[in-house]
Length: 135
Image (cartoon, rainbow, N blue to C red; front, side, top):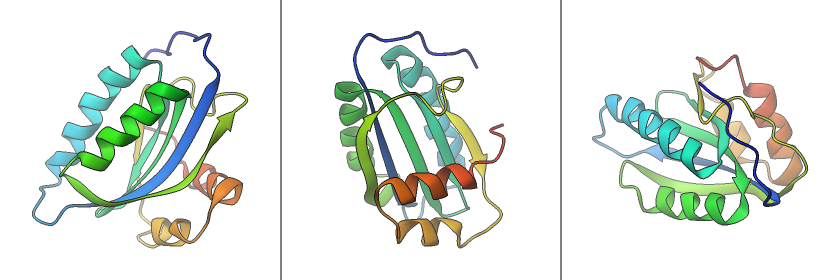
């Protein structure tokens, strides 16, 4: 995974949770991650995606227009539902600058459910605490 080139646009971040759509195979997750890595690198977006077997948690960071456009595409993607934004705000410095999309699975099946109850900086802190070394 190569680092994303620096951008002159101010940084913005979004943290959301969502659920894998009913009937979607687990292979959909690999498809999502593979496409996202390539697209994110081209768009100057970095971040981390975690998956617990049914739910996603993702932090996206990059130029605001690109991050918001990506979030719109995610909301329209039929492979997952119940997209709920927990945090969106300007960002001083990237948290996951080395990953166009870091990906990790979670063994704690309730971690994303607990995260969903948080908002704003508290949600971001809890998400960063969840982040294990991306594969």
